[in-house]
Image 1 (tube, rainbow, N blue to C red):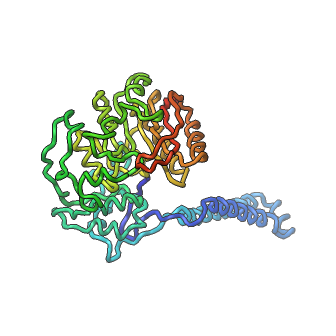
Image 2: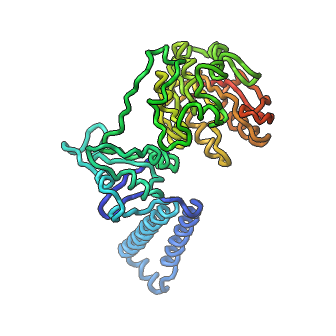
Image 3: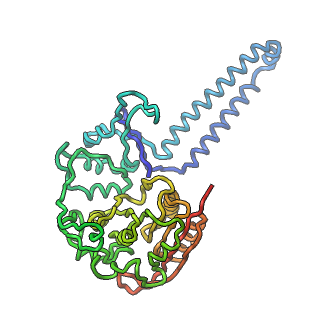
Length: 420
């Protein structure tokens, strides 16, 4: 998601959900142009006949009159453009948010202030001030955001990580910075890398506040997602066999996938990577993998970090904070699913394509297809990118939750082409 600067004073320029179709702006522009031109035509054709004759005998006055008419038309166009800009702001959702309200935290106001650069305009960037940014959807959760920013400066931060995550899940991302000290838990019992990859993680170093489960045993009994059933049990069970032993034709082995790569695999990105097992298996093969996660129903980020791996606390609505063409491998599964909004998956796929290098591999691992329509839509979307299909398997497997229901999954290894 993008972010926008907020300006205090007479108001704060913010986004608000659009209430009309943006095509209305185009219709208004067309109407404005037609009206202006009709006015101009009328102005040139409605003069009295004797006045027109007079004009032909006074060419200089005629030119002057034409200039005045042209200037008048230009002024009308400029005024119409300004009016259109105001209407577009309303249609697209820009609105003024008054953060001088009593319930807005003073820290939020301070964070959003513009700070002039001490030496004036920066010659490299062209900016003259530093501007703070927050996610555009924060406007819809202004009260929660103000609550998040209510704390004692230089004191301990409230134990409100779940509030911050609630804001992120509502699209309020990035969150504003805070001037308080986050709670620091002593991380005892950590193992050195790479031993840490498969050693039990102490429950004492994990944050359980705001979660339904208060221990790992509880988490391992729940189906946290299609890709995380018992995934916190890294000493026994299926999690110890994932990516090295296939249970069905949709399960690819890591070494088989790596053998398909051209130019080698050095760095990768795992989207919604559960407890970090994919990154752990890749680490055993000297490949560095960043695991994208949120702490939805479980302390995923802390658990991944305790294994000596890199968790990236980020929602999939946020643009990936990486430069173009940097990853050799991107791994994803059913966490990509955009629900009933296909355009959401489309935006996500384009961002995945952006950060994957030419010749790199996109490993779609057991993506759940609810029906043939979804499978067809996903297939057509993938084919738009022109990837080479190194592996492509559509098959059925039993639900991991133990319901016994047979479900359809798509697994694929795709190679990104070079584009000029």
